[in-house]
Image (cartoon, helix red, strand yellow):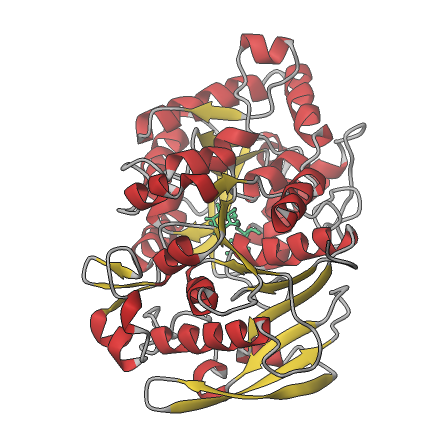
Length: 490
Ligand code: ADP
Ligand code: GLC
């Protein structure tokens, strides 16, 4: 039997508040803390992006590593730092030619993938694998390496045939992003020949880093039970459903939690007014006013009374933005709703949404960009939250909105199906309803569901109960952290 705390090396490309493009960042903040709080000994390894390095104060150099890159050897400096937001040490792969760049971790200023992404994440994964073997010989060797998403898919592969290696766990946060690169990259990066087969990393003639994680990790998890089942089907499997089915013995879905301290309407420092389940108004209304007044000079009684729909998210096909674009003009014509939307992503969605806002300047408010504080204010100030994702591995925003008394409207998929209970006569009567769920993936069903939600919004007593049901639910990490700890120990 092993003595002492389980040592876990988390490997990820994102962790809030240092670097975040979506839910991956949130989870890599709160999950390591949740397992740390339950006694595990944690290190979290991240790439040394420019934005991240700038936030570090005291760093210690753990050592240097030379690993193979695309044009010969690459030297990476491994840093250790303590950061006030983290209860455990952070490790950072500092390799300026690969990571010291402005802006987004994955794309350049015009939204195109960095051309050397294959090399960047191969080098990152090589360093991670060596650290997992205590390659710098400073006396900390993990029992488990827990790697996340395609950027870290090669970690398990590099470790697979190492004697005395730690257990490897690979978590899929989104199967749609596979880290797919041409065969030429596989050659240039000197990846082992024996990986190149349909049973290895090869996928439709190229290299799939996500597939590497699936094939070589000892255990695979994904972020909700429903998504774990969905990805084994052709509809949601992105061509990997057969492989995932064949690996179902080592695949499980563990629902994400949320950080209930960061996302708490009673204490959230980003909100102008606080509120709680027992007294939702007037706090929520003051947030609504503040939110509206970001976009219009004065929010009068009519503006405050009209239902306000909110949306925060990456503007990509996954998120059903085209259904929003189809539904909103109809809703504007038929009802008095307003919409506040914050997001960034595909240029075509950004343009169409900006055009819609210009067309309805008093009723559609669109902010293109990334703004953590505005995201909190939308969760608190909107009346309803739109999240019509075509697929959603887990989704955090619907849980944030439940907690903020802003019932979500979601499509029945993945983690949305696992967390939102549709309001109907039965679920309203037994007080299990917390939002609105549609199960036909098209714009007209989405629109009809918004109408259904608006009808309930006009019944204040029933609406309050719906809000309260969501607000009193717990989405903390307790159960999920216990599942991960059991998996580490298995
Ligand atoms: P995904 O990971 O697919 O983007 P999630 O719902 O799991 O979806 O998580 C999204 C996270 O990213 C949430 O914390 C959300 O508030 C945040 N987010 C997404 N887009 C923005 C934005 N434009 N500004 C601020 N926060 C954003
Ligand atoms: C991904 C998924 C999202 C999930 C998040 C955190 O980005 O798209 O559904 O909540 O990862 O696991």
